[in-house]
Image 1 (cartoon, rainbow, N blue to C red):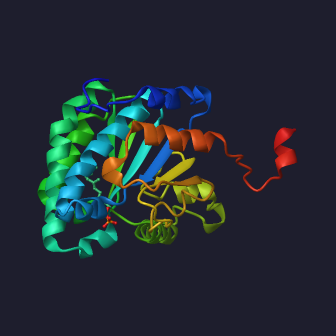
Image 2 (tube, rainbow, N blue to C red):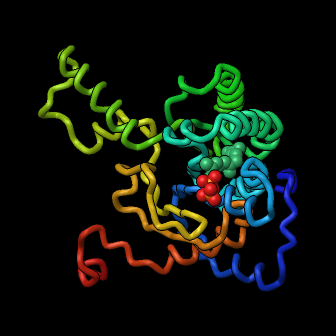
Length: 261
Ligand code: FPP
């Protein structure tokens, strides 16, 4: 995967971190709250936008790592509904960064069989961003490797309210019987329809919050919090999160003894 424009400078010690992974016990879906760009930039006496620009390298690293390991789904929280309230200069810069990154990485996504997807209120994105996104989604739609979902203008409460509205409409039109609504039926009304729930959610920068991200889908996910600020997050940090995940006992409400039977 040397086509991803990244040089990790991995040390011998880091190599051994990857070797500790149990390859047949990987999650199918990892979701990430990429946090800490602003603080990373501030530590360097620079603007918040500088932090976002440097965050793109970490996006490449985790995408490459996930694709190389054969993980099926990676979902990145790139812009929340609430992020529209940030200063206009920062919102505009984030939109421009999104467009330039999608445009510069499209070829690499193709070459590495990555399928791009977007979740969130796409209609609220500026027209040129929607266009660029749709082009890349359509160009990569036949790829069969990693599905990379960008959460854009996304919030979980927005998504759940939209799902409820659509179900209510379907009931009104007599195409859905309230008695038939199950977890699976409800899931199919979410923007993640067809994508399995994440087994692992990572948040960087030392914050221990979910921040309106995949509230329904994270019901049974393992949560991993890293102190590292997003622009510094590298493949090895991703492996560490996966190794930690592999040490967890996932009980889904059962007892430890029941799982051993
Ligand atoms: C959170 O850090 C980060 C964001 C709101 C934006 C994430 C965007 C990128 C990583 C760059 C572009 C992404 C793609 C997919 C091309 P923060 O600004 O809240 O940091 P702070 O908590 O330190 O202020």
